[in-house]
Image (cartoon, rainbow, N blue to C red; front, side):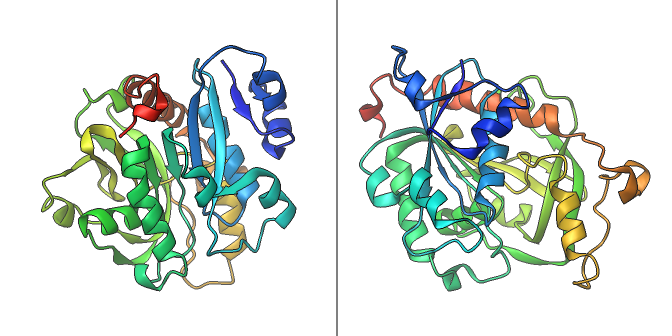
Length: 305
């Protein structure tokens, strides 16, 4: 089954050229199917890029999924046309009246700020609290993972001596968890961050469970509430060229920019990236949708609590 997306969303044309089956709302309304309802709170500055990255992964399930995009009232994006936001995004005050099978909260380029100094901290923590009674399962990614761990469980973030930048090996600590069904013993995950959460802090919280980590990257996945919350510190959703664009953007302009590890062929930027994470990214999103959303959510969506 395809994704149900808002008519004229830019990602539709991009993904059709990649031979990915998507369906606009006009056609979807003719099918008598109860789709899974997924809401995405997109905090990244390049909205269209992040929309496309996430939709690409969500499209690989046989289930029909309806995607909605949420925006904050206390923050105005600077890198996305206001027309795009008005056409495809809705305020939390509108979407909060519904319940949702799944939710994704993205990262944001604000990780070096104290949480309480973020301009939309009060609004987003209110959304976090709402999620717990209105969404079956939620993926918190990168900064959102750190923010939710801090808000719910008082897990602090710590500055890194230098940016963690590249593709790093991860080990599933409980391979029998449904989220890891079909995974190899080691999988690769892109990381691009200046801060970290530490295993020593997480282990103090009985409600939290570290489920994947790497020798260089540290904690990469944490689970809580039997899979109703996943916290992912990296970016499995990244497209092949995302780190390349980031490296070329910052090289020569910042003194902390190094070549992304395990990314370029022969560590040579002129040879392009070697993609080693795509298959596990698709597996993880597919497993999340199937085992933690579809299998757990009630048919009557209003029964979510």
